[in-house]
Length: 356
Image (cartoon, rainbow, N blue to C red):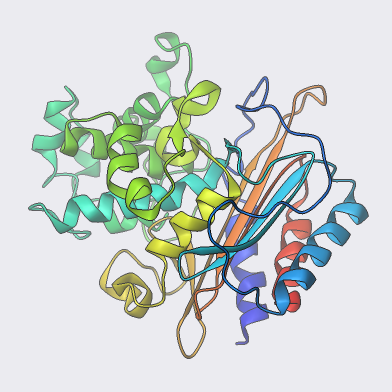
């Protein structure tokens, strides 16, 4: 199967069921005020020589925006830790905005670092992790004891796209907060489905974020910034503001330049999860692992993900984002305001790939 077909099938698998991507959630406004201006913005850091494709990538991005009425967006292109080119239209590529489900890649990398230095692996079960849950004063249901971290990270846990909360619904003001979602996923019997089949659910990464706090003894956003964002040079990344409740599954706000720095660092071609993804959390049948779609490119590995928060109320803003890292390390990140159908995400992926 060619890379284009793999991309299309991965988007189909992740698109129609995407929860933070697929759950309709409220957001009263972006975490930062968009800047006016439609010209290209270069990074303030030292610039490497631009590859020939950067001008074409920007042109493809602008053409896509024009075709679909997207008026506020930003774009960053990088490789080998250097921002090669960035641009913004009514949005600075250097200013933080919510990234929705692109947050899951951060959670995957963050938990992987914890596992690297601790007693657990991606094959550890909920039963194995009982001491960590106990630190959070929570005991999962016995039916979930055999669930592994790998099944959670690959969306093959059996958890549904939309959770049932049972009696918890009368005790919580926000049913989508990370701890409430994690507890409902692991405690409410109505959420226990057959394992092994891919169902994209925010609850999986709510559980992982919840466990990061339990295992590290720190707030999720603080720990993952320290361990993941700062080493990558994404110093302004944060879990704060109105979407902070989404934490591990959709709570990160950062600029496209900082997301590119994160992606270039942790998904560099030489990283072990790029050279041998099956040794970590990875499901070959759906090409998903550790918060990203992981596509074999022969040679090398291509990774990508999408982000989407959407609302039924047209007066409220909607958010979209995507990124990919090619086998040669070239990284492209885009984010925008607007609720778009999944076929337009696929179209942008293809346009940007054709341009580079």
